[in-house]
Image (cartoon, rainbow, N blue to C red):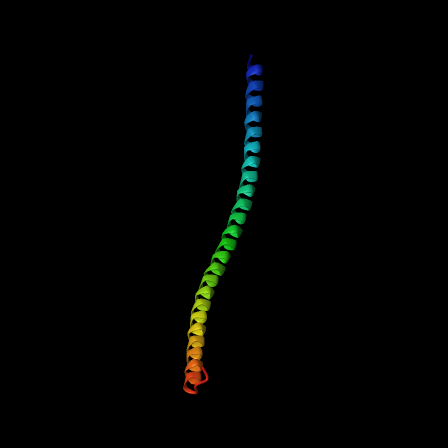
Length: 93
């Protein structure tokens, strides 16, 4: 009877050791996977930040172009008025 108990205790101890090793392997595998996913998240966040920065530059450029276009429009209108005034002074209209 004692031998049977000793065999059962040894088998249960071996089972605990095997399960502990298996758990540790699973834990390491999980840590590697999580690490890889964290790296991808960082890469995606960096890419998003770059795109947001480009978008902000694009918006700033659009604003500058709008102001430049307005200035050119005003200058052209002034030149047209000057041209019409000169033509009117010389009775060419």
